[in-house]
Image (cartoon, rainbow over all chains, first blue to last red; front, side):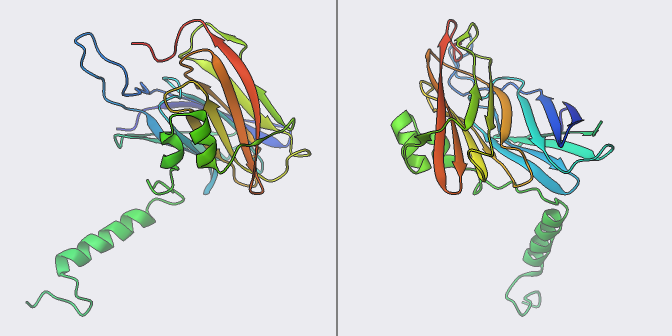
Length: 103
Length: 158
């Protein structure tokens, strides 16, 4: 169920930069396959970046975010070794998570 | 008959309710809920309707640093970055990425908690040459910055 997310969290001065790459087709629902049948919409609707118990970014996405989405955010208050997680959920209910520690 | 409790819940119903509560308790800080996603904002089909759904046409602000390529060879993957200068626009709580010519202009909404920088980076699909807007909501007011991106290969082709 949970597909892997490539994620990196790095301290940069007074903030922590999180970069995450998710694996997802991000289908808009407007494309058709070779037979002319429409390909159902399948895209990430919801993404959270969590530091400890705190949601440091809540994103809502539409189908216009590119396939295999990239997300970059910056938050304050992180220290080296803290766990940072990225969690997504798509419009079909599938989820993915990834975690790393701050470097 | 004997399985009705004083609250009028059946035993089965009670088990179901407590099960749901347990699941909710096991998801700390997970705010997933369809009610929280601003669906109406994602469903608009024109730029005017989008601004209307947001609550008005935003004021142009130099405090929003919006990077998008002038020319995108592949409209399916257009890197964008929004950064708000907090000394010009303090208290940003939301960032929107809007692609004017897409079937649904709103591509992404970022809710920015107080300890998070008003900064977001992602990649979006751009159907055809047109304006991209970065909108910031700060203390209840809307601000924007725009960039024109020329697309040589559409982002929604099949």
